[in-house]
Image (tube, rainbow, N blue to C red; front, side, top):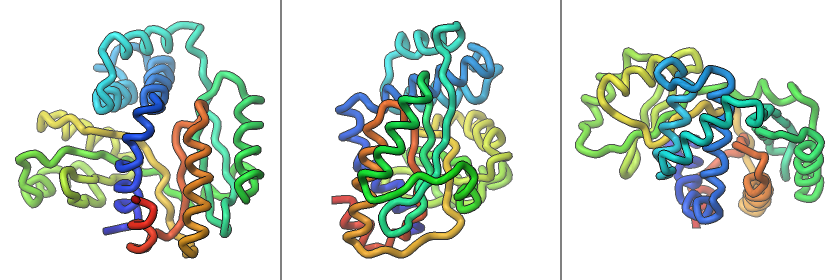
Length: 247
């Protein structure tokens, strides 16, 4: 199992706690608003909005909530800005934070505070971006699909890697092939449980378990912030660390 797959498994196990805090709803609403603002309210003409709506279905968001988010994003009241932050966590682990906010000062102050209080430091934008590649990542329920046949079917759409997990497939593609893979899954009448652009580390950093726990604690603080959409890291996830962090 690759490091990306291990991290996906950890995130899925943590997802139940996030859902209880309604954090996932908040994230998806912002995704929908940004997508509607940038590409219009019609999902048939806006691939980014289709992706966001698909993610909303994945967390069982009611249709009324989805439509309200689209309407808000299409109006002047739905103004949100995308901000990114780069820094180091405990043990020198690279941390990349994606945010959506309506208040830059609040978000900058909050992110800097978490870096400082949790044993890290905030860097300048661009200082660590070379350590991550932007990739498309899809999670598709396994259902009755035959893994070999399914992989052969979607490989021509630009899929770089497909990992088979207990109940789903984890599909990775290049940024420029995201739309092709999304379209192929639609043609196969398959709706991903999750479809998003992620930052995948090009190199990883080895750490002790104690340091890994400190990094995870920092990530938890970031993810509890309402302005934070996603957090990425380049920590090496050995089997021992992945198992410990999943508990």
